[in-house]
Each structure stands twice: as structure tokens, then as C-alpha cells.
Length: 391
Figure 1 (cartoon, rainbow, N blue to C red):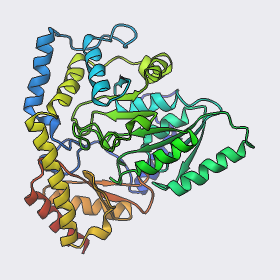
Figure 2 (cartoon, helix red, strand yellow):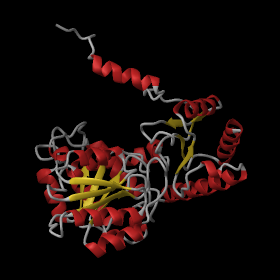
Figure 3 (cartoon, one colour):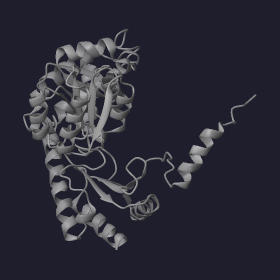
Figure 4 (cartoon, helix red, strand yellow):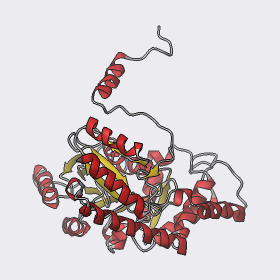
């Protein structure tokens, strides 16, 4: 007979191994250090105007509920959902949008539901864990291709079709991200679309780290390049650049109808509370305001300045090439990268070490997230200290 303090030995061994690998994860409280680690690229998460706008929207609608009260198919489909999904369909120039509670829920809900037995999923080796978890729940076969390699993708696709001896009748889904969360680099969307259209494959793109940052109205990298009509589904996440919570799957009306009927992470969860949905609506409206436009412009200036100073301090060879708000400095080894992060934290900068197994062994890194509120003086001092640490 066991009591609450008992713990399975198999799990204890795994925890000890994680500690030995210097990869043990712990929760920490927020600090007052200069933020170079959060995904709040535009500063919307703590913007007082946006907060007030969301509250005013609730007052205007006469909504004073703290929770959704149930799943959207039961009692949780409050009126703001209709307003938000209509807004999203218009903004993203898509037939339909279906809101989920998070990007994780959206990816798990899509990939566990849409690809069927007899279908094939070809995914970039660096896609987010939420995509991988969804794929694991799918009945489709899946194969990864080398990061951003159209050549390897073509070879993998040819082998898949050949393995069916010319009798393949399923769908092939190509899956990638527009901006990769750990490397910060971007997909070659033109090559992917040319290839997928030629073979009638279905392209699915996670735009989590592009929403808010790229596009005239923060609609992401794919739409910025006017390629969205050739994409089967996009996942738009609101917890990064928009500083909110939640996500949406963008696609055809029929895709939305299918997800409503079969996507378990949509069906069997309580809906988002009205205040969260009001915040998302307000964020998309705020991004086109003068203050929102200014934040986007300042963020781009910060990205350009950061990259310029990487060259000045001769650090560019240590960084993964990126034009996004995510800039990653590869420092192999969990112990070494943790020491570097600690030294920067001691100097007043909130920098997090990204350890294996989150990234492949030997590719551990410091992940610098740039924001509209990071001053050039802060960036200059940060890189000066980093250069001295790495010397």
C-alpha cells in the first residue's frame, strides 16, 4: 500500500537522469530583469491602452461573465466568438476561422484529426512539439525532412509515393512553420508552394511566431508574401506577438465544420472566457492603430540594430541567421550555455538557456527575443557583455 509521498522508481530514475544531464527544468517567478526572453514582441501583453480597450468592449456588449461556462458545443459559445471569427476570416482573407484555447490545442486538434489512415505527413524536423504530439495521435504515417530542405522533402515524398507501388490514393500533408521558434529563421514558402501545387499536396503552416510581427496588419509571413490562398491550413497563435492567449485554425468553411465535429481538443474543453476573446479582438484592432504601428516599426528597427551589432562585436558566426524577433546564439553543452545565461542574468538581463533535449544535443543555445520596448542602449550593452563572456 502506498501513500502520497511514494513515487514510482521508474519516474525517479528519469528525473535523476535529467538532473545528471544538466537539463532539469524548474519553474521560476518573474523577475525585474530586462526582458530578452518573452514572446511579447510588441509589448501588447502589458499595454494599458489595449487592456482598457478590451474592458471597454465587454462594457459595450453588456458582458459581465467570468467564464465561458462550458465547451463551445454546450454553453460556452458566447457572442464574442462570432465577432472574433468573423474578424479573423476578413483579416486573414480566408473562408473560415475556428478559435482554440491555445496554439498547442490547435495543433494537437488539427494533426490528430485531419490526416487519416492511409494519408502521409511530411514535416520539417524542427517543427514545434505541439505539432509532433498531434502527429503522434494521428492514424497517418509520418516522416520528417531536413530543416528547410526542399531537396530532402522532394526525396522523401518520392520515396513515399514509390513505396505504394503507384497505388497511393491518400493525401500527403506537408507541415512546417513560417518562423521557427528556436532558430528564428523563416521558411522558403515559394519553393514549398510550387512543389505542393505541382503534386496536389496539402500544405499546413504554423504561423505562431509570425503573427503580429509580419504583414501589414500582423497577419503573418505567408499572407505578407501573398501566398495564403495556396495553403490548406494556417495556425495563427495569439500568445506571442499579440500578447494574448488562444489560437485559430484558418482554412475553408468545410475544414472548420470538420474540426467542429471531430477535433477532440476543441470539442471536449471549456471555451475561452469572454475577457480573453475581447482581448484578442482588441489586439487585432490595436495593431492597426498609430500606437500599434509604432510598436511594429520599432521592433523592426531593434531587429536591424541587433543584427548590425552582431557584426560589430564579431558574434554573427555564433548566431543562426534570422530576420525575425528570435535571435539564437549556439553554445554547445547544457552546462556551458547555462553558465553563460547566468552571467547575463547577473548583469541584469533576462536571458534563458535553451537546453537539450528541447533542442538537439550540441545545439544548445541562448535565445534572444527582441521587443519593441528594448532600447538600442540595452541591446548594445547586452551584446558587449555577451562578447566578453564568450571570449
